Length: 489
View: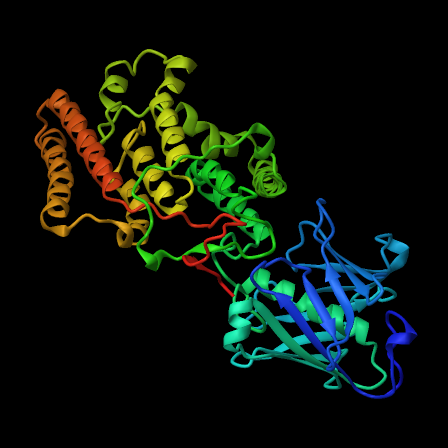
């Protein structure tokens, strides 16, 4: 085939080129490759520059001179990367762009558009993961079946597993720019690891984007979820806190604690951070993206429905006063004083116990985010101004995620908690039946039953905390003890 010069003519040779690419898997950093020939001579290396607002990688030749600069575009749903000539990031020096072919994929598929392909209606090259078991991929010319290069992930040996190196062998066809192919393999690996967390050519659509290191998608979905159902806003603070640069870095998958080791502490853990560390790149990015999505969705809804939307979807929850009987301890006070207008201070002061308790739980347990969210949800419901039975579903769904880390035995402590919680609820329902169906004025007794139900919720919550085996989700970077770490590679 004719020469495919993309980067430089010196990287096109008449015969096939075999590349050996090695990535440091333990560091789990994007842009940490060494690329050589089959004889072990280094041809390229990929380095990540210092701190910046954009992810960036530089492909260097054997002399250390920049050949290509790869930069990820911000806030794109297709993981678009732009590749520039040398060390430049100017638009005039852009050689090509790489992006996922679709948002949802079973295997990783990338499309490559050269700089002069402005319309991007048809890709100039495409990369496709072909074998899930062997974790291989193929580079095709355009939409055709003409193969220009193939990549094979090497199987691990005992030595490579212990050394923490991930290796790939790449065969580049004659007259094809092998610097270009090397950059595609690097980007393919980075995008696949961000999305799937399982390596080359595996499933890309994962729900737990934060666990996989994909911060932008996690922020996007969080902003969208809060727009449709506002109560998950209470999870914003623990998510922000867990995005500590010592625990989490956008792009590479964070190190996970080995929960099977049974060495997790039962002590209450707290976050200690400075104001300066609070404003990390990951936290700012998550806040901007999720907040932007939330505001954009609300702006669209406001455009169509006006102030009625703002009141029904958002403002109503801040000033809601419901005089009808419910599980909340506030209902009786609202019932007695409903005819007079409550001041804004009175309406908002009921949030004070909720707010205080939320802060206490977040700063105590946010390193164990699933458990923290469970505690937050139970506390939020128990101290809410209005409680109906449907609210219990909010924390029921989290129970299966925390029970494996509980030291509470079903006999007798677990049975006691179940009987106490169901008994307190049944006690309230009996008085509710007397009021609702028999017409007996038992509002005072019903309010006292609400107090008993709050006490039961508090007792059960304390017991769950006491018996929980504290299990941080992420392991701190740079820790020397690696025996209890599990990587999602």
